[in-house]
Image 1 (cartoon, one colour):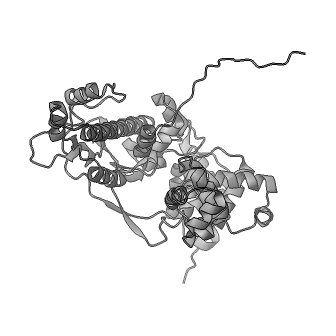
Image 2 (cartoon, helix red, strand yellow):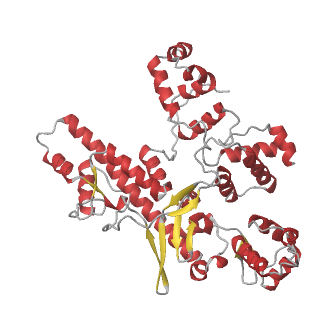
Image 3 (cartoon, one colour):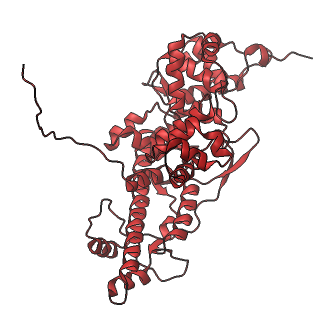
Length: 458
């Protein structure tokens, strides 16, 4: 037996989540209204950025490859995202459309529908979502939940982990501590004091007893204060930002699909980011060199680096959203030509394969975004629909619900159709589903049972 030490080299590939990459992923997820707010915040923080106003002479910006190349050469970097040949001011974009704000439960159920889960786990997850309070907390004991939903405790535990992995981060927690820890695992910067504060010192922190916490942890008050500042960025009530029945918000389409002759054209609503440019004044200041002290130069170079990453990230968002929507138009062409009743079954994986990207990229690009089509305003996730078999290959669940609604609208109110009769009528149209599936789709479409639809002669 040989004992001793040995030095070995091992080569590994690892993806590092840099601050710039985090920014790019965050921008990709932003709907156009939130992107506008983000751009306004960046304009306040970064003097190198400007907005070209209407009527101004064009100022080189993200649409000027020569200028961006000069900046990159100055910083000794290469571009990672192709920038457009030119940008045009398209005004303020389409007007907003009023729509009911989604509730927390709708938001969670929408995400759950996109996940591939075993039926027992899906049923348990649905039950847990419906059991959350308005702040996103689960106040029901898991053993009680298992008994109530008729699933074994291990299945309920897996379902809880699934729910806790949904957006918003922290939902499904059973206590304030668990809620904050769930969020810190995702958005934390690695400060080891923050989990300690969450687990043992929230009461002292709420009372402002920084000194006592520092003494207990054996660190300086300044270290505790920095951890407390990071902790305050977390949301103790992750469900409260969602609407309640009756709330109204305004929706601005992120993408517009227009018919031009036999084809469809996709336009990305990019205002105000389309008018975002690099300041020529600071360019001249840096290019001059003389008279600029080292501290000022270092500050401007950092801000320039940040501005370039922002412009790249915005352009990458535009191109990704454009490509994803174009793929949806290709794969859902019957919908765009003939309307919602012709929606086809479609998955994130199909679009990802069409574009050669990961499913998560498609998910981020479509999250919370809307498209204006010739048939109305729709969420992009609307086009990712499950389906059933039909005589010509497949039909989406949404299309089946519309067919059911059409049959119910045309029925004799004195003798409404039963679910079995609806199933037979659909079969005559080439859509073969069971009576139980008809009942499920009818309920999801908000259509009452035949007994409740029945009317009597006076």
